[in-house]
Amino acid sequence: MFSSEVVVREGRCRRATPRHAAAFETQIRLRTASRAPCRIIDISSGGARLRLYQDLEPETSIGLSLPGRGLVDAHIVWADGREAGCRFDRPLDEATVAVLQASATERGAGSA
Image (cartoon, rainbow, N blue to C red; front, side, top):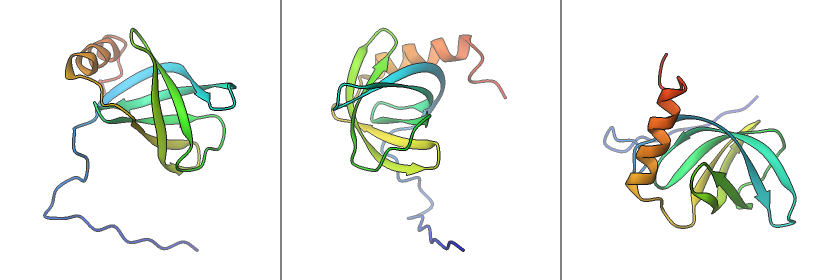
């Protein structure tokens, strides 16, 4: 049995920047130079939520391949089964996030 407690401060989300739906099949590169497929589920200027096909521990350094941007350095901050959140070592500019979001919306990622 698992138990956890979530504390929401003043009704606000703890993210500094809003996340946008995404739908990108891409790759991560590990420090060992191995590559693995992943899917970006949502993205912000500060990080992304990923669907992984292997287990990664928090604090694992990765390179995340972004369409039109190339390899972006990041690290895993949380992992739960096959999903994980990563934080970019350098935040993306808002123009890049807007292009990625628009591209995902064209592919139907933003529709419910």
